[in-house]
Image (tube, rainbow over all chains, first blue to last red; front, side, top):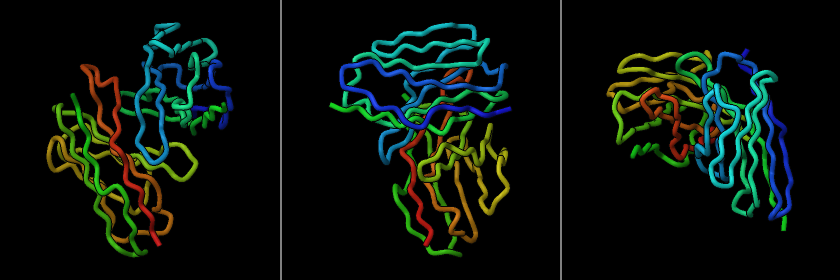
Length: 110
Length: 113
């Protein structure tokens, strides 16, 4: 299957950590991705993780991958107002395609 | 570094009119190219992808078509637009030795009235 699921909304206080969760279905996915979309713009690749890794950290971003449960999460430390956006989880499907979730709208409140 | 040019940024077209959206890529050669559509408030739907010149794979049957006349040019077309074709169209290109990274253009907001 190619269904990627993620919660639709997340509200977080400025300075707190945000955790966005995603489940995927294709156990043969090679890579898993997090993208960020700001209003009216294209998707920006934030980070990606190879399927044989459990964790990847990049500055304020931490990706955790649980292959057994097919669960991917993105943690944003010290969330700022500029982090308000839609975040998409995606998995590779076959050799050429990515399948995306519906996106999680993150709202950062003061 | 790779750059994806996509135009126009916004487009308003009447029902039944033709469509041509163009995407060009700089800074890479022989990329895989993609057209995605994003309906308002929803995720991304893969429409077409291409792994080489003249090679087009269609994911969703509809009144749209795609062509790749050059290595770094990908065109999305329609002969007659429908209301349901409204949406945000995104071109994307792979980057990386294993094509593991997918980068997106800035998108075209199409409104069919």
